[in-house]
Amino acid sequence: MGTLTAVARNTRVTLEMIKWEHSVFALPFALTGAVLAADGIPAWRTLLLIVICMVSARTAAMAFNRLVDAEIDRINPRTAMRAIPAGLLSRGFVAAFTLVSSAVFLLAAGLLNRLTLLLSPLALGIVLAYSYMKRVTRWSHLVLGVALGIAPSAAWIAVRGSLDWRIVVLTIAVLLWVAGFDVLYACQDFEHDCANGLNSIPQAFGLRGAFRIARGMHVVLFVLLLWMLRLFHLHSIALAGVLVAGALLVYEHSIISPADIRRMNASFFTLNGIISAVYFLATAADVLLFRMR
Image 1 (cartoon, rainbow, N blue to C red):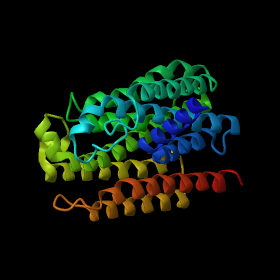
Image 2 (cartoon, rainbow, N blue to C red; image 1 turned 45 degrees about the vertical axis):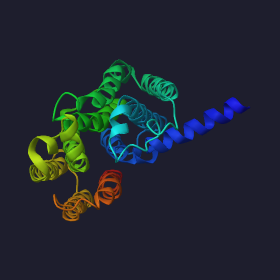
Image 3 (tube, rainbow, N blue to C red; image 1 turned 120 degrees about the vertical axis):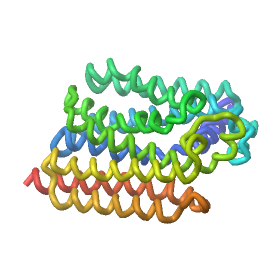
C-alpha cells in the first residue's frame, strides 16, 4: 500500500512539474489539422487517439526535458526549486515516467494507421531531441517549434493516412508561433545563459535583438494563417479567428519589453493558450457551418 501511495504521490508531483495542463498549447492546432483533413468532425475513435498521442508525447518530452536539464535547473535561481533539483523526485522515477509516456504515445499512434505507426519513432525523437539543443545551437527555439508544429500535419496523417502540402503551411505557422514565444520566454534566463555558456537567441543577439526576432516570427505566422484561409477555402468565421489571434499576439508583445519582462508568465501561459483555442474554434466552426449545410 505504501508503494502505491508513493507512486501516486510521485506521479502527481511529476504532472505538476511538467505543467501537464499546458498540453492545451498545441492540442488545438492538432485538432484543427484533424478537422481540416476530415472536412468536418473526424471519427471519435480517431479524435481520442489523436488527443492521447498529443498529451502522451508532450508529457514524455517535458519529463525528459526536466530529467536532462536537472543540473542546469539546479544552478539557475529561476528553476532551482523544480522537483528534481529540489529533491522531490528521483531521476529514476522521472526516467520511468518518460518511458511509460513514450510507450503510450507509440501504442496510440500505432492504432491510428500504418503511416502514423511508421512515423511515430521519428516524431518521438524530434520532441525528445529538443532537450539537448540549448547545448548545441542558439536556434534551439526552432527545434521546439518543430516539435509542436508537427501536430497539425500529424493529425492530418492520422485522419487520412497521407500528407497534403497545404497542412504543412499550418505546421510552419505553428513552428514560428512556438519559436517566437520561446525566444521571449528565454529572455528570463539571459544572464544565466550568458554566464553558463548556454545557447539561445537572447544570449546570441541580446534582449532587444531577441524581441525583434520574435516579432518577426509572429508577423510571418500571421501571414501564413491568412494564407491558410485561401488554401482551404475558409470563410468569415475563420477570418475572424485569425484576426482575433493576431490581435492577441499584438497584445502579448505589448505587455512585455526588453526592459520589463515581469508579465512574461501572463504572456506565455495564458495568452498563448487562448490564441490556439480561438484559432481552432473559429476554424472548426467555419468548416462545420459552411460545409455541412
